[in-house]
Image 1 (tube, rainbow, N blue to C red):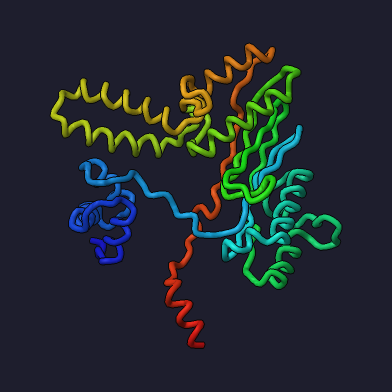
Image 2: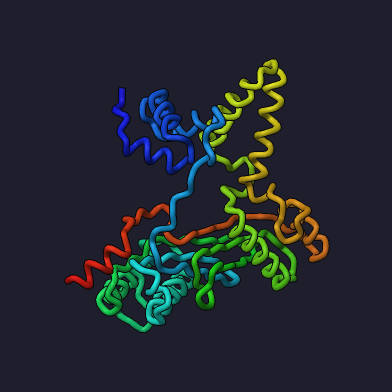
Amino acid sequence: MAQITAALVKELREQTGAGMMDCKAALDENDGVMEAAIDWLRAKGLSKAAKKAGRAAAEGLIAVMCDQKRAVVVEVNSETDFVARNEDFQKLVSNIAEVALQHGGDRDAIGATSYPASAKSVDEIVSEHVGSIGENLQFRRMALLEDQGCVFGAYVHNAVTDNLGKIGVAVALKYAGEKHDEVAALARQVAMHVAATSPVCVNPEEVPADLINREREVLTEQARQSGKPENVIEKMIEGRIRKFYEEICLSKQTFVIDGENSVEKALQLAGKDLGADISLSAFVRFGLGEGVEKEESDFAAEVAATAGA
């Protein structure tokens, strides 16, 4: 039996919004396993959220760029938000994105590629900027969309300057027609949609099996509490799974631009106007600092400590 510590209860409470005693009971029932305890609370109707998203603790900037061949999304982190307003840092992030757009490849390959107008690599230049800017910097990650027969679009939310901001999205649309500019504008609209809705994948068949199985288990437990017969419960669950797909799959989401059609349907209608079929190929969405832990600090205490130094 796992030891249920106060810290573990606190963590579960912060993730779910459930009461302290409910969190303690959930952990006791599930041998201290956090995800199982979250599901237990959801099934009991005691959790206020399915899962609290990882806080965007790291600072810095995300860059998104695209051309006719590919689209890239790059994240470079810093310690404070002040650095994001530093022109030297902005130029660094833009240049890294341009290298990625020109050369393609993965993060390590780009890190080893020569930086513009320099004999040094991207990673070496980032290290040099640590000294000049005075903060720890990290070229953390990048993603590449590259597919023949696609038109690419990009969108940056909370932009501090062109192509740089807090959320970056790139979208690839399959299209074999000639009106590339119009389709690129449509791809940008889809990228704006992705920034707002954070889909998990493009189509239902791409949803990870463990995610669906987990959702089905929670929905089954919730439905059984209604006291309805098993055959009715099964229909209820299937309907809720379809709704789940509509929530997490880009193709099935209601397009925020028109508020009426699914994204898939909106692209089909646009294809009729633009002379050839248009369909979703892929997307990438980066939110600044996703999954990065940042130590919480007491700003007033820091100021007091500095004044007394």
